[in-house]
Amino acid sequence: MDERLSLEKRIKAELYSYDGEMSVYINDLRGSKVEIGADEEFETASCIKTFILACLYEQIAAGKCSEEDLLTYKESHFIDGSGVIRSLNFGAQLTAVNTATLMIIVSDNIATNMMIDYLGIDTINESIQRFGCPHTKLHNPINFTLYDKLGTTTPREYASIFERIAEGKLIDPVHDAKMLAIFRKQHYNSMITKFFTPYYMDSEDTGDDELIWVASKSGSMNACRNDGGIVNTPYGSYVIVLMNKNFGDSLYYAEHPATVFGAKVSRMILDQYLALEGRLKL
Image (cartoon, rainbow, N blue to C red; front, side):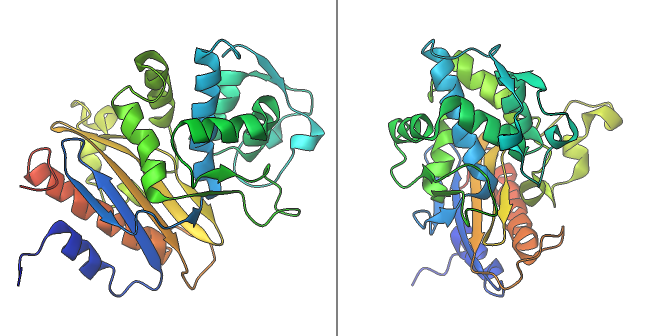
Protein backbone atom coordinates (compact mmCIF):
# COMPACT_ATOMS: atom_id res chain seq x y z
CA MET A 1 0.00 0.00 0.00
CA ASP A 2 1.35 3.45 -0.98
CA GLU A 3 1.14 5.56 2.17
CA ARG A 4 2.86 8.62 0.74
CA LEU A 5 0.83 11.81 1.04
CA SER A 6 1.03 12.87 -2.58
CA LEU A 7 -0.21 16.29 -3.71
CA GLU A 8 -3.32 14.66 -5.18
CA LYS A 9 -4.09 12.90 -1.88
CA ARG A 10 -3.60 16.11 0.10
CA ILE A 11 -5.93 18.00 -2.25
CA LYS A 12 -8.59 15.31 -1.84
CA ALA A 13 -8.17 15.44 1.94
CA GLU A 14 -8.58 19.23 1.89
CA LEU A 15 -11.79 18.86 -0.12
CA TYR A 16 -13.24 16.11 2.05
CA SER A 17 -15.36 18.54 4.08
CA TYR A 18 -16.28 20.76 1.11
CA ASP A 19 -20.02 20.87 0.39
CA GLY A 20 -19.68 20.80 -3.37
CA GLU A 21 -17.78 19.25 -6.25
CA MET A 22 -14.40 20.65 -7.28
CA SER A 23 -12.39 19.48 -10.26
CA VAL A 24 -8.71 20.33 -10.40
CA TYR A 25 -6.14 20.37 -13.20
CA ILE A 26 -2.53 21.44 -12.71
CA ASN A 27 0.39 21.24 -15.14
CA ASP A 28 3.91 22.30 -14.16
CA LEU A 29 4.83 22.46 -17.88
CA ARG A 30 7.77 20.14 -17.13
CA GLY A 31 5.98 16.83 -17.49
CA SER A 32 4.01 16.54 -14.24
CA LYS A 33 0.26 16.99 -13.88
CA VAL A 34 -2.37 16.54 -11.18
CA GLU A 35 -5.86 15.78 -12.45
CA ILE A 36 -9.00 15.37 -10.33
CA GLY A 37 -12.18 15.21 -12.43
CA ALA A 38 -10.40 17.01 -15.26
CA ASP A 39 -12.86 15.79 -17.90
CA GLU A 40 -16.03 16.72 -16.01
CA GLU A 41 -18.22 19.19 -17.91
CA PHE A 42 -18.95 22.52 -16.21
CA GLU A 43 -20.87 25.67 -16.92
CA THR A 44 -18.19 28.15 -17.96
CA ALA A 45 -19.80 31.36 -16.76
CA SER A 46 -17.31 34.12 -17.69
CA CYS A 47 -14.53 31.63 -18.41
CA ILE A 48 -15.99 31.38 -21.92
CA LYS A 49 -14.55 34.86 -22.45
CA THR A 50 -11.09 33.28 -22.63
CA PHE A 51 -12.14 31.33 -25.72
CA ILE A 52 -13.69 34.44 -27.26
CA LEU A 53 -10.41 36.33 -26.81
CA ALA A 54 -8.52 33.44 -28.39
CA CYS A 55 -10.92 33.46 -31.35
CA LEU A 56 -10.40 37.20 -31.80
CA TYR A 57 -6.64 36.83 -32.01
CA GLU A 58 -6.92 33.84 -34.30
CA GLN A 59 -8.99 36.01 -36.65
CA ILE A 60 -6.51 38.87 -36.31
CA ALA A 61 -3.59 36.56 -37.11
CA ALA A 62 -5.48 35.36 -40.21
CA GLY A 63 -6.04 38.94 -41.37
CA LYS A 64 -9.83 38.71 -41.00
CA CYS A 65 -10.05 41.22 -38.14
CA SER A 66 -7.98 44.07 -36.76
CA GLU A 67 -7.27 45.22 -33.23
CA GLU A 68 -8.27 48.69 -34.43
CA ASP A 69 -11.69 47.77 -35.84
CA LEU A 70 -14.33 49.96 -34.20
CA LEU A 71 -17.21 48.29 -32.36
CA THR A 72 -20.33 50.28 -31.50
CA TYR A 73 -22.20 49.79 -28.23
CA LYS A 74 -25.84 49.12 -29.18
CA GLU A 75 -28.94 48.82 -27.06
CA SER A 76 -29.15 45.14 -28.03
CA HIS A 77 -25.82 44.53 -26.26
CA PHE A 78 -27.04 45.78 -22.89
CA ILE A 79 -27.02 43.37 -19.96
CA ASP A 80 -26.65 43.86 -16.22
CA GLY A 81 -23.78 42.37 -14.30
CA SER A 82 -20.05 42.97 -14.25
CA GLY A 83 -18.33 45.62 -16.30
CA VAL A 84 -18.14 49.35 -16.97
CA ILE A 85 -19.51 49.86 -20.50
CA ARG A 86 -23.06 49.98 -19.10
CA SER A 87 -22.09 53.42 -17.72
CA LEU A 88 -21.55 54.71 -21.27
CA ASN A 89 -24.16 55.96 -23.73
CA PHE A 90 -25.43 53.80 -26.57
CA GLY A 91 -23.42 54.62 -29.67
CA ALA A 92 -20.08 54.71 -27.85
CA GLN A 93 -17.31 53.18 -29.92
CA LEU A 94 -14.33 51.14 -28.77
CA THR A 95 -11.62 49.36 -30.72
CA ALA A 96 -11.81 45.59 -30.86
CA VAL A 97 -8.77 45.22 -28.62
CA ASN A 98 -10.12 47.64 -26.02
CA THR A 99 -13.50 45.88 -26.04
CA ALA A 100 -11.78 42.51 -25.62
CA THR A 101 -9.57 43.87 -22.84
CA LEU A 102 -12.60 45.05 -20.85
CA MET A 103 -14.25 41.67 -21.50
CA ILE A 104 -11.34 40.00 -19.72
CA ILE A 105 -9.96 42.35 -17.08
CA VAL A 106 -13.29 43.47 -15.55
CA SER A 107 -15.32 40.63 -17.09
CA ASP A 108 -17.51 43.19 -18.87
CA ASN A 109 -20.71 41.45 -19.99
CA ILE A 110 -21.64 44.15 -22.49
CA ALA A 111 -18.15 44.01 -24.01
CA THR A 112 -18.67 40.25 -24.31
CA ASN A 113 -21.94 40.70 -26.20
CA MET A 114 -20.24 43.23 -28.46
CA MET A 115 -17.47 40.72 -29.20
CA ILE A 116 -19.98 37.92 -29.83
CA ASP A 117 -21.88 40.19 -32.23
CA TYR A 118 -18.63 41.21 -33.94
CA LEU A 119 -17.16 37.70 -34.35
CA GLY A 120 -20.35 35.61 -34.54
CA ILE A 121 -21.23 32.60 -32.39
CA ASP A 122 -20.54 30.15 -35.22
CA THR A 123 -17.08 31.63 -35.83
CA ILE A 124 -16.28 31.45 -32.11
CA ASN A 125 -17.39 27.83 -31.83
CA GLU A 126 -15.52 26.85 -34.99
CA SER A 127 -12.42 28.44 -33.49
CA ILE A 128 -12.92 26.52 -30.24
CA GLN A 129 -13.06 23.27 -32.19
CA ARG A 130 -9.86 24.17 -34.05
CA PHE A 131 -8.23 24.68 -30.67
CA GLY A 132 -9.00 21.03 -29.95
CA CYS A 133 -11.76 21.54 -27.38
CA PRO A 134 -14.65 19.25 -28.43
CA HIS A 135 -16.49 19.58 -25.10
CA THR A 136 -16.37 23.38 -25.07
CA LYS A 137 -19.14 25.52 -26.57
CA LEU A 138 -20.52 29.04 -26.44
CA HIS A 139 -24.28 28.54 -26.38
CA ASN A 140 -25.59 32.10 -26.76
CA PRO A 141 -24.95 35.76 -25.96
CA ILE A 142 -25.24 36.83 -22.32
CA ASN A 143 -28.91 37.30 -21.50
CA PHE A 144 -30.01 36.11 -18.08
CA THR A 145 -33.70 36.47 -18.99
CA LEU A 146 -33.64 34.36 -22.15
CA TYR A 147 -30.93 31.80 -21.33
CA ASP A 148 -30.00 29.85 -18.20
CA LYS A 149 -26.49 28.94 -19.34
CA LEU A 150 -23.69 30.60 -21.25
CA GLY A 151 -21.05 28.03 -22.09
CA THR A 152 -19.73 24.55 -21.40
CA THR A 153 -16.16 23.32 -20.94
CA THR A 154 -13.96 20.95 -18.95
CA PRO A 155 -10.99 21.78 -16.71
CA ARG A 156 -8.63 20.01 -19.13
CA GLU A 157 -9.87 21.94 -22.16
CA TYR A 158 -9.87 25.27 -20.32
CA ALA A 159 -6.31 24.61 -19.13
CA SER A 160 -5.22 23.69 -22.65
CA ILE A 161 -5.69 27.30 -23.79
CA PHE A 162 -3.42 28.63 -21.04
CA GLU A 163 -0.90 25.82 -21.52
CA ARG A 164 -0.43 26.76 -25.15
CA ILE A 165 -0.44 30.51 -24.47
CA ALA A 166 2.28 29.98 -21.85
CA GLU A 167 4.39 28.21 -24.47
CA GLY A 168 3.50 30.57 -27.34
CA LYS A 169 1.87 27.73 -29.25
CA LEU A 170 -1.86 28.55 -29.32
CA ILE A 171 -1.76 30.93 -32.29
CA ASP A 172 1.82 32.19 -32.52
CA PRO A 173 4.28 33.77 -30.07
CA VAL A 174 3.36 37.36 -30.98
CA HIS A 175 -0.41 37.03 -30.59
CA ASP A 176 -0.12 34.70 -27.59
CA ALA A 177 2.03 37.33 -25.86
CA LYS A 178 -0.67 39.93 -26.49
CA MET A 179 -3.30 37.70 -24.89
CA LEU A 180 -1.01 36.94 -21.97
CA ALA A 181 -0.59 40.66 -21.33
CA ILE A 182 -4.37 41.09 -21.18
CA PHE A 183 -4.85 38.13 -18.83
CA ARG A 184 -2.21 39.59 -16.49
CA LYS A 185 -4.43 42.66 -16.00
CA GLN A 186 -7.43 40.58 -14.87
CA HIS A 187 -9.03 41.99 -11.70
CA TYR A 188 -10.97 38.95 -10.47
CA ASN A 189 -8.49 36.18 -9.65
CA SER A 190 -9.38 35.90 -5.97
CA MET A 191 -9.76 32.11 -5.93
CA ILE A 192 -6.25 31.49 -7.25
CA THR A 193 -4.50 34.23 -5.26
CA LYS A 194 -6.69 34.68 -2.16
CA PHE A 195 -4.18 33.00 0.18
CA PHE A 196 -0.98 33.93 -1.68
CA THR A 197 1.51 35.90 0.39
CA PRO A 198 0.88 39.55 -0.62
CA TYR A 199 4.59 40.39 -0.56
CA TYR A 200 5.19 38.09 -3.53
CA MET A 201 2.78 40.01 -5.74
CA ASP A 202 3.02 43.65 -4.64
CA SER A 203 6.17 45.08 -6.18
CA GLU A 204 4.77 48.63 -6.23
CA ASP A 205 4.57 48.89 -2.45
CA THR A 206 7.56 46.74 -1.50
CA GLY A 207 9.92 48.29 -4.02
CA ASP A 208 11.24 44.82 -4.87
CA ASP A 209 10.80 42.91 -8.09
CA GLU A 210 7.44 41.22 -8.59
CA LEU A 211 8.14 37.63 -7.58
CA ILE A 212 4.83 36.08 -8.65
CA TRP A 213 2.31 37.15 -11.25
CA VAL A 214 -0.91 35.55 -12.43
CA ALA A 215 -2.55 35.64 -15.87
CA SER A 216 -6.05 34.27 -15.49
CA LYS A 217 -9.79 34.44 -16.09
CA SER A 218 -12.43 33.47 -13.56
CA GLY A 219 -16.16 32.89 -13.92
CA SER A 220 -19.08 32.71 -11.52
CA MET A 221 -22.79 32.02 -11.87
CA ASN A 222 -25.34 30.42 -9.57
CA ALA A 223 -24.32 27.01 -10.85
CA CYS A 224 -20.52 27.37 -10.74
CA ARG A 225 -17.42 29.08 -9.37
CA ASN A 226 -14.40 28.73 -11.66
CA ASP A 227 -10.89 30.10 -11.97
CA GLY A 228 -7.95 29.23 -14.15
CA GLY A 229 -4.78 30.54 -15.67
CA ILE A 230 -1.00 30.77 -15.44
CA VAL A 231 0.96 31.32 -12.23
CA ASN A 232 4.49 32.58 -12.88
CA THR A 233 7.21 32.25 -10.24
CA PRO A 234 11.00 32.64 -10.10
CA TYR A 235 11.16 28.90 -10.89
CA GLY A 236 8.93 29.04 -13.96
CA SER A 237 5.20 28.86 -14.65
CA TYR A 238 2.43 26.38 -13.99
CA VAL A 239 -1.15 26.20 -15.23
CA ILE A 240 -3.99 25.75 -12.76
CA VAL A 241 -7.74 25.32 -13.26
CA LEU A 242 -10.27 24.98 -10.44
CA MET A 243 -13.95 24.42 -11.30
CA ASN A 244 -16.83 24.03 -8.85
CA LYS A 245 -20.44 22.90 -9.09
CA ASN A 246 -23.15 21.21 -7.02
CA PHE A 247 -22.55 23.41 -3.97
CA GLY A 248 -25.40 24.33 -1.66
CA ASP A 249 -25.06 28.12 -1.51
CA SER A 250 -25.74 29.97 -4.76
CA LEU A 251 -25.12 33.46 -3.35
CA TYR A 252 -22.06 35.36 -4.57
CA TYR A 253 -19.73 36.70 -1.87
CA ALA A 254 -16.00 36.82 -1.15
CA GLU A 255 -16.00 34.02 1.44
CA HIS A 256 -18.13 31.59 -0.56
CA PRO A 257 -17.04 28.01 0.30
CA ALA A 258 -16.08 27.30 -3.32
CA THR A 259 -13.79 30.32 -3.32
CA VAL A 260 -12.29 29.52 0.09
CA PHE A 261 -11.66 25.84 -0.65
CA GLY A 262 -10.37 26.71 -4.11
CA ALA A 263 -7.97 29.21 -2.55
CA LYS A 264 -6.76 26.58 -0.06
CA VAL A 265 -6.04 24.16 -2.89
CA SER A 266 -4.32 26.89 -4.90
CA ARG A 267 -2.03 27.80 -2.00
CA MET A 268 -1.24 24.12 -1.44
CA ILE A 269 -0.18 23.86 -5.09
CA LEU A 270 1.93 27.04 -4.93
CA ASP A 271 3.73 25.81 -1.81
CA GLN A 272 4.47 22.47 -3.45
CA TYR A 273 5.75 24.14 -6.63
CA LEU A 274 8.00 26.55 -4.71
CA ALA A 275 9.30 23.87 -2.36
CA LEU A 276 10.27 21.67 -5.32
CA GLU A 277 11.68 24.70 -7.17
CA GLY A 278 9.47 24.52 -10.23
CA ARG A 279 7.92 21.07 -10.13
CA LEU A 280 4.77 19.45 -8.80
CA LYS A 281 6.46 16.10 -8.13
CA LEU A 282 9.95 14.89 -7.26
